[in-house]
Length: 422
Ligand SMILES: Cc1ncc(COP(=O)(O)O)c(C=O)c1O
Picture 1 (cartoon, helix red, strand yellow):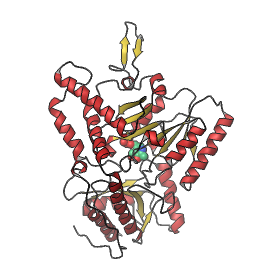
Picture 2: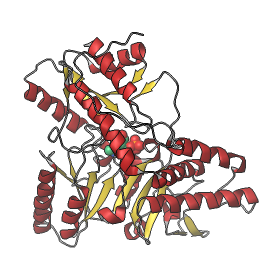
Picture 3: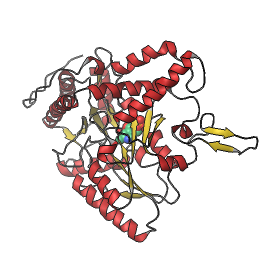
Picture 4: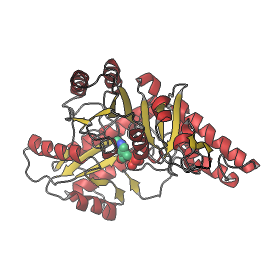
């Protein structure tokens, strides 16, 4: 493996040392993981919590034995910890799911009849595809203020042209999985509520990088994936208002979701609360892992973590900007606030080939493709071609994403490898 230094790197910002032990992440020496936005590595806190619980591992909500009772307690404590971490209100439900996709599908199935959902075209497919026919998809705005204006205009029109008694749900991301750019969630929530609509926040990419507080942002629902938040084992969560969730048919039907089943085929009384949508034996280890990371992050100095990540991100973006064949994708201005995610293309080179060479020749893992946000990624590729006047940009992109375990040396290795490949 050969690594050359990038000759024209600007003076790069210093990066503070790595975070505390509980927020250490696991990894394999020599393998450079710059693909946190797809799945982040496992935090030591999650691994430790799971290891500690494993000898006790038994049924949840289904046994009288000591092991089972301890597991039930661990599961319900995890629910409390996760809810507290995300600022759940006292009467919100905290429902464990498999991931963000599952959480948003659960909400989509819980919408009252006649609900119109309003989204932006820049969303991840998980926040575009579950919504019912008749949903409104607003164009990608030029800047965050444009998003707020477009939402206000769309809701005014919707309220004027349709029955004002029918529910409206606004569905937005906190941070783009393509560009890392932050969306003005609190302002969008204010606009939604002013028009009598509710709002769900897709926090899959925001939560790993910044505190997300449902109450403070005044959003009605929040969806998150554990595996992007340093907590593998397959749990996600939907947190939010109880009324629609308690009135909806169970997301899954089966044991645990019922309070009574009579002799006739459809003689069943469904439970209310999280149990209604969590039929079947739950994913205890996923919930416990997610709660452990939430607890560790709650204790961490998030300001310092943010500063560290932003320094690394600046190093990465400055380094990419210094490479003549590399073009960054972005929706907003170059200096718009963002989390540690950067998508880019290498002019004249197929992105899948670049990603494969980074892996095989440099042991660097990045993502390539359209990032499950096809409408946005295609649009940004077109805009990048127009902005740079280049005709040799590929049809798909590369994405590098960083987080707790990332280092300046890893960023430099990517930059050096790209310089060599180009
Ligand atoms: C913004 C955003 N929302 C939703 C999802 C879906 O997450 P998951 O695959 O964990 O369900 C992703 C995944 O990349 C994402 O980036």
